Length: 201
Image (cartoon, rainbow, N blue to C red; front, side, top):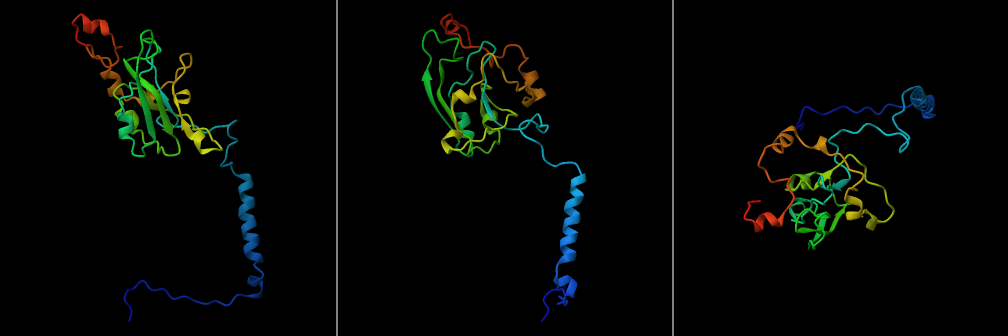
């Protein structure tokens, strides 16, 4: 009994003597391979030569500093909670007297690690961060031989004071306009003296 109309008739064609030698198939394959010699190469000589990368490409993370060089991260843990791969771990500490220029808030990330093997580069960490402390950049993650070398700490994540990383292309126009509104305290450094004087922060 035929259940559907999609049945096909399969023929068992007897091969000729030439077809049994497979010479026509080999010659056809060599012609296809030889035709690619005169076409544009599909590969590049990386790292000497690189391909253009989209401005919103999500790659190697960076922990940003503010305009004064202080670390923005306050170790609130929202990025770790938002991470679906549970690739982010951190350990918080309190800022000591005299470290105001190093850390933006009274609490900072003493240890901040991202397991690049677990990270899926979804960008949820930068969306969850209320301090604009973490961004994904267009930099490619380095290749390593050992698994533990893919656990990036602050030494690899925090941007250098004299070598800032531009992440303006990852911010939408709406965010840029929002930051220009007067009266917002989002990007203002913490100042305990204002609290002592009764000012709102």
